Length: 402
Image (cartoon, rainbow, N blue to C red; front, side, top):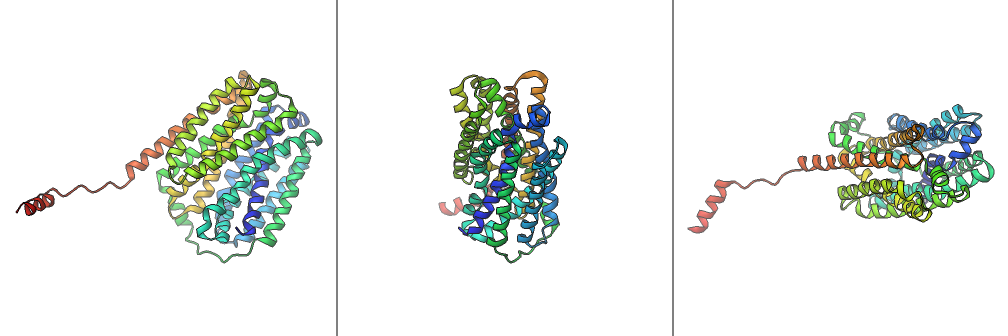
């Protein structure tokens, strides 16, 4: 695998850590910025909203720009936002900085996927994408717990600066280790947009959105759930988040194995399992051992569906996968916006820190319904085998009889 693919994986790790680590910093940010925990949770939603807006818009704007130059420009935008966040004097500036950093994510994932495949060659497409997007899994296993640990011992700004330093390293890696590739012929914006005339694409995007909303409705508030409900000390929260990350890693392996061969079954089983685990979390969160097991299983269920969600959109998009892939990233982040907002709303309503798990289970049920609709539409539009011509078959039988 070319070294440039690993550089792209490092960049995805930086971006993924920035997106996810707020969940581990909730108490520290709330105390330092003098806002409530649900209000801090909206920093996750704000980042997701930046991805939703920036991804498709910047992808379209950069379609005719050299891909390496586009990646470098997007990394500069990300680093600028991350730096502003580390220096933010208050909540409003921090929210704005998060949105700026997020603008680069969707386009980077879309363009970076094409670059990774071109570097590795068509025969290694799956491996290249697996290496690149393994950065997201590693962000959950290493980045989020490390950010939480740094925040607890040195302050949340140090966590931001650490990611910023890695992002600068990734920028240098892209500059010197990712070669300038020959440009692909561009089919035109009309060809890219034509995929969205297919209703199955929109159902697939809805499935991604609802599944992701279910995950982040609960995940965003795991830290106060562990400390206020389960009774763990704050010092153990990073280790518990590592368990979630390990579950994510195992889920990615399971999902990657079955996504190509049984995509719809993968979605049905994975989303259904996530709904069951989230509903169970409201009970198991009151016992430490049970909460540990449920946290790990939650990670497995949450990430087992990601390969199938991405493959479903690409399959339905046909010959226009670039913009559709970026839009699916936006759909994920619409879910990331809705999830923390729903979770914070049920907490603000006085339902307690277990309520986001119930709300997440309901969102997962809605996602399962969308996946079932997608499967039904696929069966309805699939080509049916031709019926035999009765007159011809009758003549053949008569001929054989003679």
